[in-house]
Length: 278
Image (cartoon, rainbow, N blue to C red; front, side, top):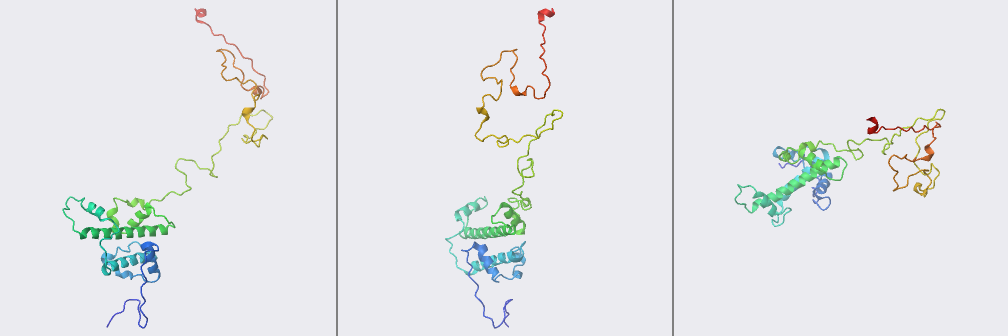
């Protein structure tokens, strides 16, 4: 008595599987299309040595990867191959194989098998990394995606020296988070500088620090302080230095009686000369 595969029933025509088209989304897009239409293989087929095919994956992503592997196995076993066309250059693979000093000769079939194995390995690792990127709502592969993909399967343990597992659990800094050591403000602007206030005269309230804007002083934007020659009453002209010992002129004339106190008389202090002391 002939046994029917799971999911089939008598009286229903067997439907043709769709074409595995990699022109739309690559292997990931083709496998996702087949699994979405119900052509994903039974997960129980991948046990024993094949258990690591979908290890660490769940739900739809598990079906996508098993569909990819089923297509790869069918392609290797049934279809004809052109051994002159390869995804990876055979010269580079031969160079890597000859790096081992114990390798004396390389057969013609060995680079072909290595090239196909590297092709499958890179494709599966890229699909696993892309799955991790989709789970995090991203459309760009990052190094952390590859590290997380390697950590989900024991098959990639030999790469632990190249991509450490710590990178998979490393949380990336948010775009708006400031760098360490930089103070933060509530509005994201520069912090306001504290201007020490001078003690005010009794009876007069202390004024807040002025706003340094042209509109608050009633000045036109094109007005420049440097164009006012009489702003400072006794400004020292450039290039004319006062003689040594002469009293220095006042820099700001209007600051003379700002607090209302009488000006103190300058006292002359006579310094004794050496022959007077003797």
